[in-house]
Image (cartoon, rainbow, N blue to C red; front, side, top):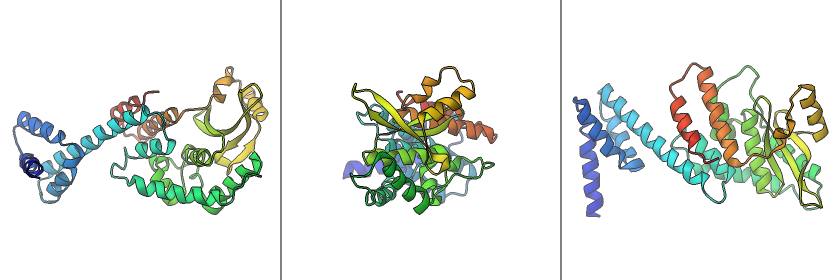
Length: 289
């Protein structure tokens, strides 16, 4: 208890020095505060509220941001080297870049309710297409998940909290959630990318030679519309893509979340904000793909 109180007193003393005019001295104070990690954030937020010095407030904001960034980098590395890289966990970590204090448990509870509603309509006698029809009905008709208007370009459509709250997200956002739900309900669904970073899903089946083959594909942009592999091959050939086999390789959760960071970087840049490129690149590189 005494040690905790001593640490708290030392941290508060360090925070009181954030108005240090000598920059090298301020850097030393900042580094010592960094060592406390996320435990320092509540004290920093309180200090921000209790000062009217805009320079100190900016320093506090920068420190909090970098503490969250360092923690997220650590969490992404830990997730990427874990034995089971849960797709939902990766999606939550991705969202934490923009919403560092995101309540992961609340997100998981919302997803669990959605999963439960789908599970209640399923039974073992259903065919693969019938199971997808049930999933589509709950996901697109009951919960009414949709993509934004074609002219809308906003990073908010990438994040899972916004997706669950507004039921609106880019096709990759819908696709990741859809893929996770299907997989958690023991459906052999995988995510893939078409040219132009367009996310789609495929239902895999294992043949008598233990080889996984695509039985049919699902388009998240078209309310889970089903199309055949032959139709996809014909489209790719029509568009004159030479090595079409690369578009049939199932993506790992790591590869999917890495693509999300790449898309996030692109959207920020397209909006004229290049200040986050280095941060996003660092987080993307934390994923051991």
